[in-house]
Image (cartoon, rainbow over all chains, first blue to last red; front, side):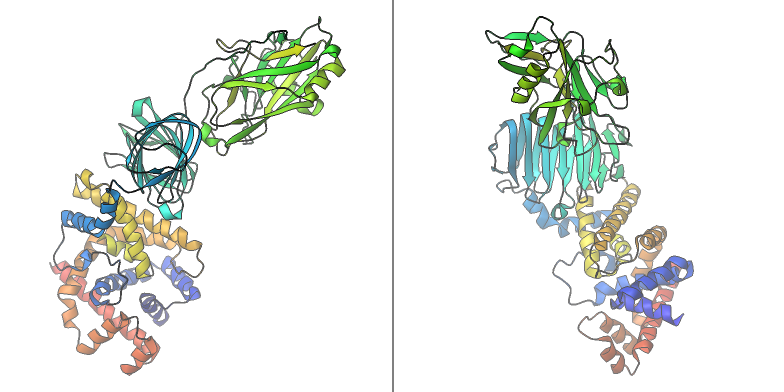
Length: 441
Length: 156
């Protein structure tokens, strides 16, 4: 027993070595009897520590535990308020810069605060109408917003997301950063997490990307969420697990003279690696790289057929695609720049009807020729993509085939699960045109 | 109460104060929503436990910082939570009554251990004890205080 007693006493003396600490840890873990003795000693220690200690650091906290009278909750609360009163003062000093607008990616803002890149921001409301933007709070916490979004900057340690999607990165310096939503708030403990406000603020979804957060509802419920866990906060409180959602389509097409245009005719669709075709939509050419265990990787395939054209006489060739939002996934989970590759095949005779083409039945990029590459910033929602390359022109000329099949892939993956699926209008899209091959001779 | 709970799980006093401040920030944000003492107590102990464990994880990155293992902290946190009201009463009793029952030497020795400037072997010698003997003695003084406190608290 002597040995344990000495270890415990030296523990309170704070002169244990690392090995001794481990020894004590193991002894305590094993013996409930020793733990009881330790609690007695620790309780005496705690009582005496504040009574006897003289040379403490300045940040001495209110020593409510050493007061002789029993202290009510209210007094306890008041003492807490006192002890952090200084923080409180700086939280509500409206003149102070509390954040910086770190970057704008195709961002359009509506706010009384400055909205150019690098602007110093004070307490206030900011509304992001389009694009993606990053705000860095002075505490170090970074919030990446996806339009449409609305955020209230409240202090260096607190913001309120009223609308939209955001990813919050919290470094060591900003532990305790709070992101409020209309239905509650999250306290970050040094992590990254995603948040989506839905249904006019009635629902907030949280997903922890790294580390952990605690969620709190106005009713007083709280839940600790660990990495990769997700939860929903609504009127009824907090519940684990989630579903993600958003968006709607749009159109664009340009006209040009003396150009011969070929469009796809029915052979225009996406394939998905796990063949779960419920995750495809015939209006869209959906493209995504997903390396997860149940891959939702999608590629687009489209075929142009024209037996009138003498391809060998082609002078120029351009492929046009219309980028449209399909509403699947979140753009904040994508890298800033997304790269795509376009492959071509002369003909494709494997399957006659393309209806519900399986991944395994589709042509692969192994046998195809790379004819073009392009990039799309994650902030871009829609627009016309033109691929014009010597490789494309040469491929069409050299093969002089009756039909050509193209495979479109995304080369960049998502930073986290539920990243956005890029979509281009297919030939059945209600508003935008499908893939078009523009030739001149 | 809460501070004592946190303090009993963390080796260094300064670390406990840091963790306590983090907890205070979290609790403070909720003060306007306090409706029942009991719910608040339960919740605040939950927050405290979480923050202590978060601190413990941060420690793992600093090799020289001493701390109990996560398992031991969790085990003790649970047991301490159950006894916390009793322990509150006992601390009160220690300060109000039991300290006065110590003789002058005991009280001085105990007080000196909280003075970081005095090295233990010097302190031990000034009381005519070996270092090990001194630790034993201090252990027993605390044990007597704890015993007295329990009797007082239970009698109250």
